[in-house]
Length: 347
Image 1 (cartoon, rainbow, N blue to C red):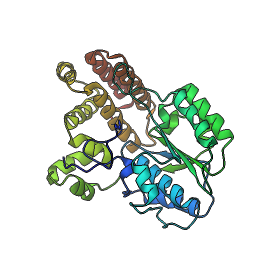
Image 2: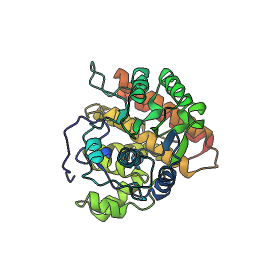
Image 3: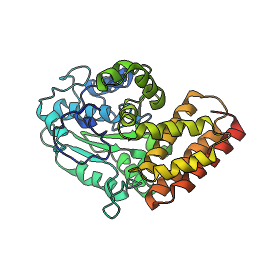
């Protein structure tokens, strides 16, 4: 995979290896509608207290959140900046955001468990409580404070309630940007206090993949586009390391949900156990692939498949956190998918 130069060496759990972090990315691909809506509100001096930026993983939610943040920190809620909310890459705000050093920006996300070295499964209440102190700080003459929660659907119940309290008493000249892969998991009261920016999977990724992954041929790009479900971030993840194999196996498991090949699954689980973060990666690909198929069948009998998606998310999250046997987790997922296929037909 082609490498990109990083502005600063920062340990980022959400960075695709070899590519810039969303806070360093100034180009937003294929999300013109959401960007235009945000621009109208900000440049019209009528921004909401909070935006809920939703959509599948890897389609530009964080990139849009950082774009909004840079504009507010550089120009405020005014029309002094460009209509597309762009900010010069060498501006003070852009450089500080890229370096994670802007005093007006707070980013909250899951951290790494110091005991296990693994990514934590929840965004804790202690992290969310940092918002109160941050928004209570003096922002400077005419300054704005922006907080990004990425992803908000990782919050546990206590964290969600702490966030809701903040939304009930919003500070002035402050913006809260909630990034969510599954906004339905958020409290209805949180969703009702945010304006929505819904991002969509890209319909044509070939040109973008040519630019980002010039070493791939047309057949490889077509395979990536199919497996990634319109997500550039997912495509880049798949293109590196063992991601493609994990994604292909996840896709195959869903495709043959009614009659899974148990011996082949057990053999793959043993192999996956020797991969770095193999179980966690497979679970993510499986949930993403299933979610993509569910969205494509809007209006059909989807309740069994939605239940399966939720159960698989919980199962893999628990198994990764507790270091459980991958074979039991994979077999459990196969049983869950088989039951959904029996009740609702193929997905």
